[in-house]
Image (tube, rainbow, N blue to C red; front, side, top):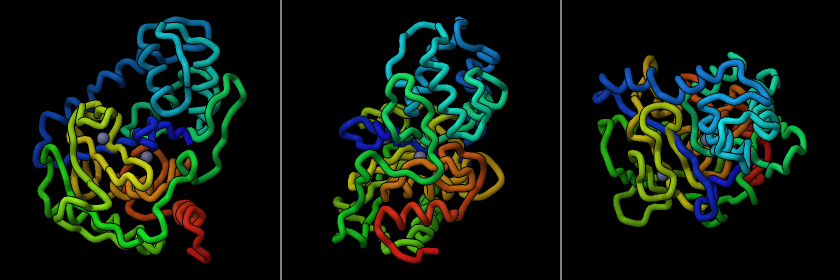
Length: 299
Ligand SMILES: [Zn+2]
Ligand SMILES: [Zn+2]
């Protein structure tokens, strides 16, 4: 997968966002008026050969999520951008038009995980990479066999939600993965957990700063790093019905924590966009974890 991100020490980022509702009022407005969304709206209809303000932001977006390697810092929509955009469209099951149509614009406006989607390195214009299902990080890193009883600890640089709500949501997400794997997850309070989960804002010291409200919600490092970071500037909630559901995002990020990359299967929890509350694993997720760890007969 475009996992430049995951191997943190190399260049991996996985972002997941979360934010709870006690703090929400003014942020909701900020979210809907997010400047990237405005930039995208400006780019509606643009295609190869044209120039438009905001193209640099679009290129940066495609680069961040693994679709565009090298790009010129100009507002020119060139051939490389067209190929990258088509790959983005294919991954997300949109029509591969290669230009900024309404559907593509809508999809890019959704909040999403910070981990890149694309697994294969892009060689110039080599054609479209189509991923039918689950994927792994480059090199398929996973937890070694002696590490199946993982410990975790909450380590945040800022607090955004009541800890009992955070614990409840994250524990539920861990249990969902436990049921389809041989992993167990136990919260501990000593300084050396296998997994450190926390809320952080903007630049938080790992080289992958969060982007404020909207867009990137969270990121997680590939095994066996154990860092799972939630963007403190999101409107997090712990129940269905409003902004970003913590359990949904935790479920997705824990998939990364265990070694799964993004899936293009739309009902998979490992699909990169956040499109509402989803608190169960799909067959594609179960197949992914079973394949990575060599389980038989996981249903
Ligand atoms: Zn992700
Ligand atoms: Zn981080």
